[in-house]
Amino acid sequence: MSEYFNKELFGNRLLETMRDNNDTTYSLAEYLHLSPSAISRYTSGDNAPKIPTVNAMAERYKVSPGWLMGTKGVSKYLESEETAKRIPIIGVIAAGTPMLAQENIEGFEYVPESLEVDFCLRIKGDSMIGAYIFDGSLVFIRRQQDVENGEIAAVLIDGQDATLKRVYKVNGTVILRSENPNNPDQIYTKKTMKEVSILGKAIRYISEVR
Image (cartoon, one colour):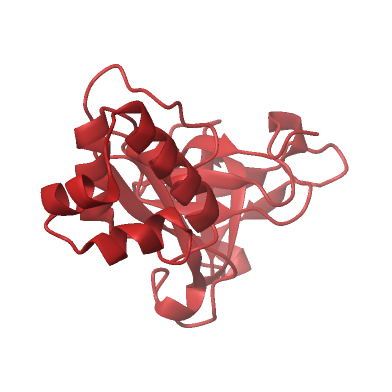
């Protein structure tokens, strides 16, 4: 379970919703077909349940699964009933390994099932600060092989070094542009002998308050 499933916060929020709904450890355990001791371990923050269990709890209390899990920026209540899904957080991509190989995954984030994203990219550096995407931000990516000119995308260069940039394509040349005037454009032509692959389009991001 990743750092983004906040077990302590989950336990506190589970207790809060149980009290608000006059539920007990025993009644919730019976509803979920679990032992009361398992519920106690969840409320104490010692253990974290699996996603189907979280979804079942959220459905019972009519709250957001992401809010229960402590996901940043997720409201307690959703406009409609919605389940959560787990997507990987990609850190530094190891040379020669598939993007979603275990050694490239540093954790997981939890988002509503309806959000059309497939993975997160952990941003390193200040190249996208003009788009309010800072060092350490999580950017949610929808997998697709191409984007429109000027859209922000996750790009893989030579099978490693995933980067987030605005993408421009002109007469067979790929230009990767940062949102920081101190960073020059990265320009790739057939002569550069570099393989440039678009991993997907940036859909949303999470940054710390600054």
